[in-house]
Image (cartoon, rainbow, N blue to C red):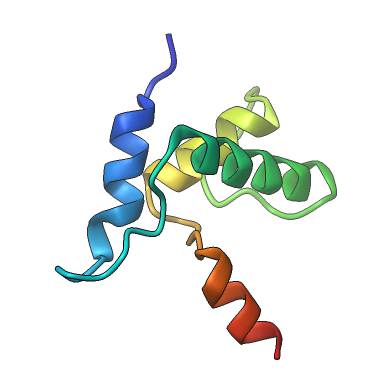
Amino acid sequence: MLHPSYADLIEVVNSGVEEGEAPVVNSRYSIVLAAAKRARQIIGGEEAMVPSRGKKPLSIAVEEIYKEKVKIFSGNEELEEQE
């Protein structure tokens, strides 16, 4: 069983969203993509932001998301930052 659950992760990621704004993440698919992207960064050599001894990159990425050590941006925000 995955801990934390998808519902817990979605709640944590969307906790900073003001009332009336669109949530950053609305599905498990979005959480999976964000965790996979962060895991690839860790595999590529980026430093983990949580204790990582003996953990796999995906487990580290999920823990970082849950502890709000990394921020997930919606697709629209990423486009705005790149311009």
